[in-house]
Every structure is written in structure tokens, then in C-alpha cells.
Length: 121
Picture 1: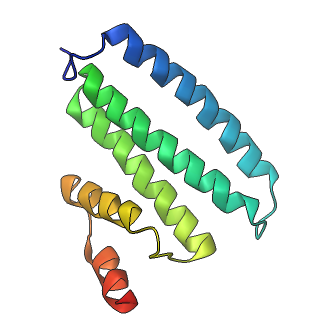
Picture 2 (picture 1 turned 180 degrees about the horizontal axis):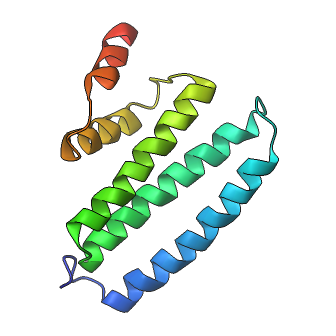
């Protein structure tokens, strides 16, 4: 059952497939770059963004919420990997709000995000 009736199921399916192909290409490029290469951060961000939007498309298409949650967990995983390699950048507050909301939705630990926000203030 579609949750977003402004578009049909075929639209969401097509967008999801295109996005998954782009994610796959980005992941290959990321693996080829050496650790410490500044371009890796851009690939992490692109993958994170695409995975998030794909999860939202799957939700809109009416996919099972448990499957959507697994996709959102992958987004959190990418955020963690990027943070481990490049540190925490509070300047992109919108991203931190999305992360916090995802962690609450997934019943994941929100303490780390809140602590980092407090430290930056």
C-alpha cells in the first residue's frame, strides 16, 4: 500500500533502483581511495544521503517498516564510519537532527549525539 499517493509504486521502484546503482558505484570508488584521502569524506556523505533517501522512498512506496528500519540502520552505520575516519562535524546541524531522529526511531543510543552537541555549544 502506497504511503505517498502523489506518485505511483513504479516511480518509487525506478528511483530506488537508480539510487542503488549510484550507491554501488560510490562504494566501489570509496574502496579504491586510500585512508586519509579527503575525497573519502565526500563519498561517505553521498552514500549516507542516498541510503537515507532510498529508505524514505521505500517507506513512501509502502514497504514493510521493519525493512525500512534496516535501511535506516545502514545510514547510521555509514555516519559512524565517517565519524571514525574524519571526526564529528557539528556544522551540519540538519544532519545531526536527522541522525538523532533516526536513533530515537530505531531505539538506538542517542547519548553520543547529544553529548557532542553539548560539547560544541
